[in-house]
Image 1: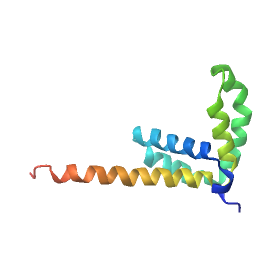
Image 2 (image 1 turned 90 degrees about the horizontal axis):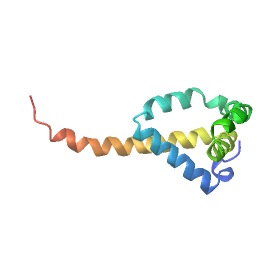
Image 3 (image 1 turned 45 degrees about the horizontal axis):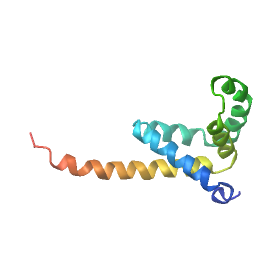
Amino acid sequence: MTDPDAAITDDDRALLDELADAIVARRLATPALFFLESMRPLGFVGSQLMIVLRPIVAIVWSSPRRWDQVQRVLEVRGSTELLCLRLEERLAGDSEAVRPRNRDRPQK
């Protein structure tokens, strides 16, 4: 198994960070983690499906650069694990930020 960090560029890491931030901002981190963990063996198949759907996406977007970049990242074995790790880090950060507010709540 190849090291996913070696095959993924800095731009790809930035894309994974942006994707993780967007998922957490929409409060979809838990469902996304569940989906990614259950579909991990199919990451490469998903990237190939994105190639098949590329002409349809090109109709909607004139230059789907992000689509191509996500497809390239999904081709790399272990890239879904990197996205899961980023989501888990952000979830841990969010839960720590929420904890102090819960302490200030008046007791009933």
